[in-house]
Length: 168
Image 1 (cartoon, rainbow, N blue to C red):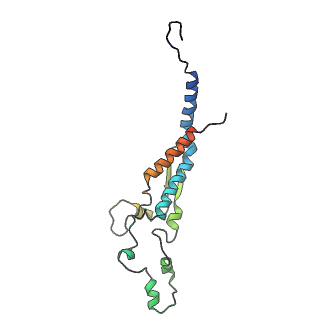
Image 2: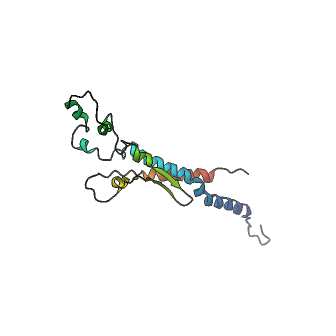
Image 3: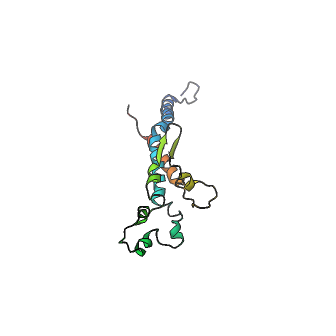
């Protein structure tokens, strides 16, 4: 207490802690960017795995109520189940946008201190994900991730990083 009876509060220690947390806040994006990019990559791959969480339109032949291409053609010609190379991809249970693995395998996370993204260098990807009017290929936007889940994951990472004790 001061001589005039007014209480005196010393904020020196609190200011020191605030400087520590300000510095942590400045570093957090650079430190967490790789993990955030991996989280975003995971969300994009989940879109492929779940076929848009079940919202992507089915294959054209499924929508038309037809069997898979090549499945009845081989039987009609009397072949013993041997399919042409172009029809082999329809064997089993094909998954949308994953028949060759080129598109899903091209999804690449990228980051730096200021940006986190997942991209593909496959030229035909834009025809599946573009919001342009559709005429032939239905919209199957693999970048339309669950933003709330992704943001919550990022918030959890940041809080964990900011609140963990640091070594002396």
